[in-house]
Amino acid sequence: GTGPGWWRSAVVYQVYPRSFADGNGDGVGDLRGIRQHLDHLEWLGVDVLWISPVYPSPMADNGYDVSDYLDVDPTYGTLGELDALIAEVHLRGMKLVLDLVVNHTSDQHPWFKESSSSPESTRRDWYWWREEPNNWGSFFSGPAWTYCEGRAAHYLHLFTKEQPDLNWENPEVRQAVYEVMRWWLDRGIDGFRMDVVNLISKDPDLPDAPVLPGQRFGNMRRSVIDGPRVHEFLAAMHREVVDRYDRDLLLVGETGETTVEEGRRYTDPARRELDMVLHYEHVEIDHGTIKWDVRPFDLDRLRDRLAAWQTGLADVGWNSLYWDNHDQPRALSRYGDDGRWRTESAKLLATVLHLQRGTPFVYQGDEIGMTNYPFASIDDVDDVEAVNYYHEAIAAGAEPEEVMDSLRAMCRDNGRTPMQWDAATPDAGFTTGTPWLAINPNYTELNVAAQIDDDDSVLSHYRRLIRLRHEDPIVVDGDFSLLADSHPQLFAFRRRHESGQLVVLANFSSEEADLGELVEECVGELVIGNGGGAVLAPWEARVYRQ
Ligand code: ISL
Image 1 (cartoon, protein in one colour):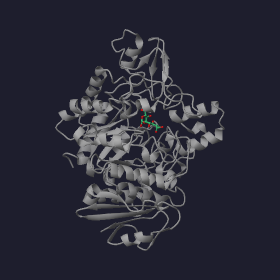
Image 2 (cartoon, protein in one colour):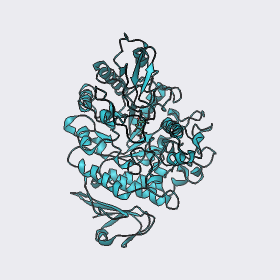
Image 3 (cartoon, rainbow, N blue to C red):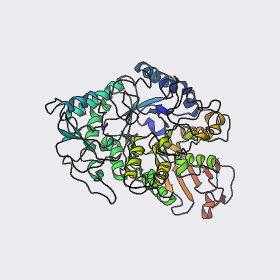
Image 4 (cartoon, protein in one colour):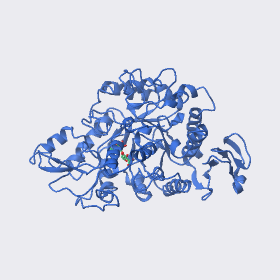
């Protein structure tokens, strides 16, 4: 639908264009490939497409390093093709949001080229320049500062050195971002997913940060995450851009390591900042301080964090719901069982996600239950974050096989292997060329074609869940309460609404689970599930409407 808050009953589908579908045979996915697969998305029933960056980029970070905000990279196609895609998506009754990456630019962006050319440059304060850098480390290993001859100074980059951070303290930078947003909105898009938007406001003193045990650089999180002016900047952006359109747009902020308290501020409709945020709390339960310090899955922590966001944003704001994106290993391999119980656990994860209160985000491949990739060595890995970490760890004396164990569990390429469309060709229907990243060998049995006509498949299950959201107001508006808060196997909750309630009972384990007193909840219409009884089968999720 449209109108205020239309996104509350919507489902978003994230396309990572490099890996979705290749329309021209060069081994890299592109806009033509997306256009060729719109039938799939319409069949699935999704309402919104979010497309990861397709702007011109040197691809130091697969397009999250933008060198021109107002065009399309030739790898992905042309601006004309993007216009055509916007029109086609709208014709099918769907909406399209683009990824806006404005915490940083590429070091090849004209703004940075000019800023770095000389200390007298008219854009000299568009980035963070210091003669003496502080001790911060980058999110992607190594220092957060790089020296530049032209300026005789260092510039700040929270990610790779090819991604210099824009200085949002400078009002000219903020105006330039507004202009980029208007330019795209005037082309007809329906909103933005705003990359690392809770990093745009830094503590302007740039103080040295504490160095954690075993680390070389200071951990700058306290000075950059949810910084001092972030809410002010977002409210101003809303006023200057979003409020000037007479259609209702969608603004989703990526807000890593933010808290429920901050999430309420970002999404409070009265504050007019963002509509929802993509927080990280439920995807950080299986590692220590750094993501490569892998820990076993812990249902208690998962349930605790999911429930905290459900109740925390119940009276104000709105949740986004996701398991996967292009930065995460596949949830099915982390929190489910991607071997014997692959189909069952993929369906369970879908059920518990889609039936919480909030807007679900389906990441390409989730809908067929794609899994992590069996990386044999670092040569199989492409992602800059993982490659940098690998070399840093080896240099510090770590054993290659141990580092590879961490990468196999956590590296972002797990979520970036090409989409598995069919088994008719050696490249899973993704490309007729050589894929830029290897295709998961399980594509022969795990692919869209094998599932689309099967009513019991993961794919059909996703379609049913999406339809349920569109048809049943309990799914959209019902309130959330946890039913079992300490059961070792169960994630169970109730959604209550004036029109009735849904009870969700999910067994997060490969053993049977005794429902105990919860068996009393097994009444009413069985909306999802195969049968009743006081015991849930391994990875069974049952839903009753009462
Ligand atoms: O998950 C992460 C924390 O270790 C990082 O992998 C992730 O990159 C970070 O959270 C922010 O992600 C976003 O901004 C990055 C880009 O590499 C990611 O792809 C993007 O989603 C820098 O633009």
